[in-house]
Length: 460
Image (cartoon, rainbow, N blue to C red):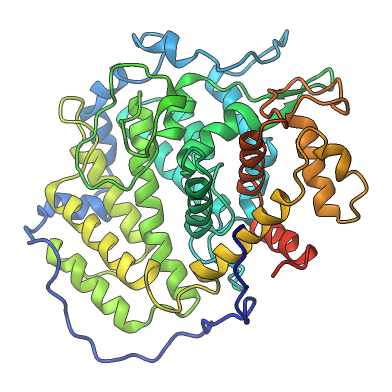
């Protein structure tokens, strides 16, 4: 069994909330060669020509023919549902709007409020969570689609659900679960695929009869969710033409989304987190005036006449306007060469000074492993085959009882309520099914519930 010891000082906030003093600045030269942006693109990017974006909507009106509407040749596949949903006599919503509501009213959407975006266990309440991130991606994606003539509703729905399968503690929690699945011989854990599993088989809603049913989302939304991975550096993306069995995808970024709207969300995800992570780094005192100067120097390599601050607002405006101005149905959704190089340079800077910075997080990867491994081992020790549900019936730990209720809901057993009409996922006679049940359960936890579960069992 995996049983590391939790290091001391887990709940200590190591990062000062005050901004550090200004050190001497020295420019770095490790970024792509710069070719200045055209003045009209620069001016447009910072909103100084108010009418140009409306002109761009006319210029890019050809995207309206690519939008996911009933006229699109992909429409019938795009609106096909994974599982049936309740028919209502006076339905006023489109298929994608209904999907949006089904995502937003699910427990998985609520739990994102208490899941890490970048900084786990941060004591600053103004720092982004997974929930605020998906709303920011939604806003950017809708704006882009509005200007390009694409289906805003579809993009909004994909964006709202794209991170619903993230583990507690962000990418560190994802890494912990990936280590366990590798050790146990299970399907590798990656959050995009887990988001698909969540919306397809785990999350449920109560219908008008009081029955619990799976979300049953449309193909276009499910596809955009599982293929949202923004960790790609190529420019000008186009949707793929062929519909695939999404459950058979084996790695993130394996294929492009099926719709133009899915492509927009994929790029909006990167636009949203680059500037916001910088802003959050300032809020917790990880960034100082030195970082401001370095970031401005990076921007000026590509926009020499830039004089403003480099922050979330300016970066979103620059990248969004440049994308709208440069995207074309023949070329694809993408940026000018300079904007694309600038994005990669900022991303590189963030990796060096935020994501991989020593002491940037209150929870290290090793500590995260200790928590996640400890919970996994705790629940694996409860396994008694098909008798597991009975054997833990009288366990006084409330977290254990919550897990028992999970097993009742998602396995075939005598305690399963008749109102549960959702998918049965586990045969408790099979150890591999039980292992997957534990992985699924942990992946849905919020940060604070994972800590509560770990502490309640006095693990370590």
